Image (cartoon, rainbow, N blue to C red):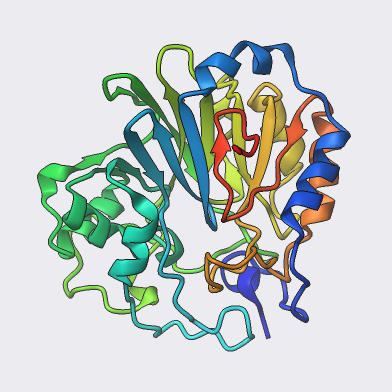
Length: 328
């Protein structure tokens, strides 16, 4: 029976992994690295930024009183993905109270691609807050099908540098991760709204993938955000983010993933592994590892390939500063 990445990326599910002790893992990862001079230079700018991991690849970024969300999947409904009984006909659902608990008053919602674990809560967020959504043409057509105002959605393809009045968003064309068979769940794109309202997770195609770099203020911390563990090397070359939120791979289908990515990004000050958690468990609990993921092995690769980068393993319940250190 194929597991979580066997369906989205391809590795087999094993027995449930133990809880990751976030503070211990973060401390252990951080002790083997040193902060670069540019991290210190951005310390004052980072004071006004805070970050919260929303699980999977999702983030809430607060810059003073402004909020940006990336891939906010919060309802985390059960699909059977983590117990070996994946149901592609699982119906989409949103828990409004749970979503409101985590999102604040977002001004922007950035969407990497249209799989359910990235977009399922976005229609509710867009309609209830009026936030502008930035994503692919497929994301646009899906949201319009869910009655989101088309004028509220910005379609991007990669290469755009958007100025939102002090928050800069650079868009990079990207790629979805590949499984051991060099494929992935629900490929496809939309050029028109779907004929019927999407009802199940199988009704949400990937629809191309994007990465984003968000820079807070004038010279504030820059954050590279990716929603899947593959990328276009040429598209991200030279971005040089302060923080890189890097999706953890589960297969070796992408050639030298960690080394090529970290080199293209110019050796980020801080590397933050994401998309390694069981995203069907509550956000109120410590993150539980996706049992198909070798998080420790990936962290070792990062340290080997970019020894000057500090590694910060995030926890759902912690608020971080713009340098990805926990705030007291």
